Length: 178
Image 1: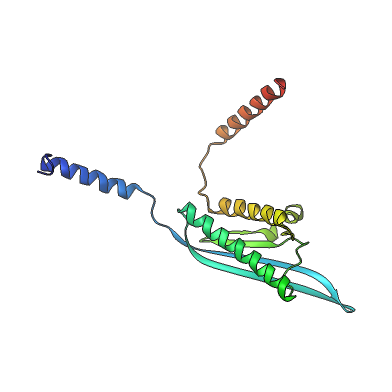
Image 2 (image 1 turned 45 degrees about the horizontal axis):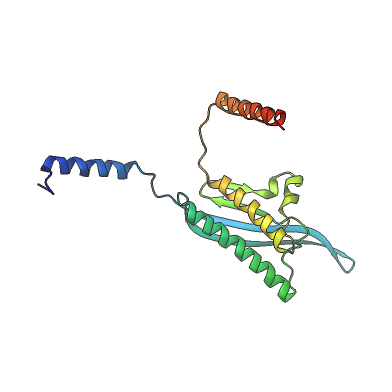
């Protein structure tokens, strides 16, 4: 007997706890690597020069742990900003902040390379020199990495269409009540 319960009840509790523990998502470690890169053509003297630079960051990541993911992405962006500040302080040239700073993210078997997206979207990835521009850049990086790390949700196409029709209907009602 355990605290007044018959022995068979205690075993039932233990079995259900074990079953619960086995039903949890498994601990998934992956290597998260991020590369910030930029390539552009400029002139030096009378010669045309191609500049290709990159900044790499890599760390082990539990992809199920959202708090850890946020810290890894925050650390990457912070290191990148510190590297850009070092560039400015030393007069070295890693990146031209008026050009897009492209990135490639790898997590396990998933990769997103922003160098392959449309130029109109790439233009939204300029770091800029002031805090407001850097905040906008960091928000965009966060959204991209969250998309990369989220598990795909299996949804029927009819459900997608119905949810869009609901949004359209509620937008129409909101427009009429203005």
